[in-house]
Image (cartoon, rainbow, N blue to C red):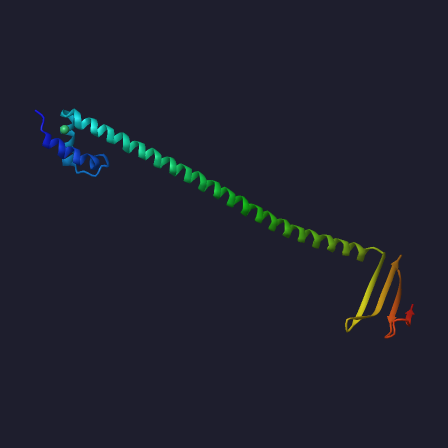
Length: 157
Ligand SMILES: [Zn+2]
């Protein structure tokens, strides 16, 4: 006792039923019909397969997108780490140089065997040079004074 009119209605509703868009009453109606109608049951099964296939394809695309996103995130993280490392290296190097010069200056100041050269400039022109030699707690200072005429050079001890 097949009612073809009912089949038409059920088949019209099947796309929505597969997408879970139908109400509970409609669901009951469709399920009841399907349990008795082989034709409609086959159509429903085919539709379900199609939907399943589409979902898998969509999931694959999402997985590819997520992988790409993660890859880009990793690259960004590596670039940031590199920049951070360069900054740290630069700061550390400056500190190291400052410490190095401080230690050297300290060593020179404490040692009794060193010499200091001091140049005096006037209007960007070198006018004087002091050279102080220090050894065994005794120091000698040489002083060169540059006159306006560079060929005439005076020397003081
Ligand atoms: Zn049917």
